Length: 193
Image 1 (cartoon, rainbow, N blue to C red):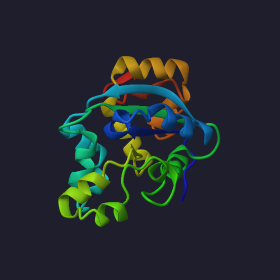
Image 2 (image 1 turned 60 degrees about the vertical axis):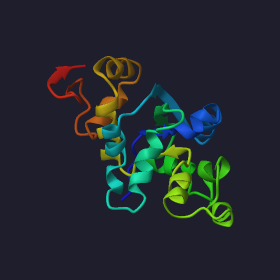
Image 3 (image 1 turned 90 degrees about the horizontal axis):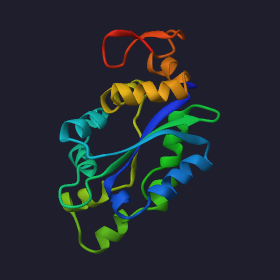
Image 4 (image 1 turned 180 degrees about the vertical axis):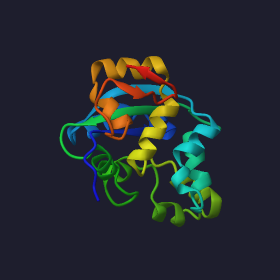
């Protein structure tokens, strides 16, 4: 069952930041109907990166995906964006725009390396997987995960400022359970927003 939520988050990974692709990637999302509501450049901790990729635990590429958000030897800045859809489900739209490596979307458009190119150069194993994981953008897999990420990465002040500008975010955060101005805050206690 497809949802019709207006909000999602994306991460522009450090490899794209280092290569100066942030503005182009944001423009691609905007052209497809997703408007940035909030943007923040951050250096993620290992724990935050693991939480962001929690749905991928058990996947053989999990470790490389996590490391792609916390580069050890290069740029460490990740750009976090909260996006709002101008029509349609924001998460579905963001996943479509992201695309799949070597096939379509942002991942193919701005890719650094293709699987074939690296194999032809004799790169294999962990090095191959590490290089392929630097795939420019991450989009979470579910609206619940998007809510969790918002709760972890936005502080109270940021959240209040966003809600002041766009009160519809409350409904999304609360899973559309209630549309009033009183909600259990994403950071815990019940409060007036």
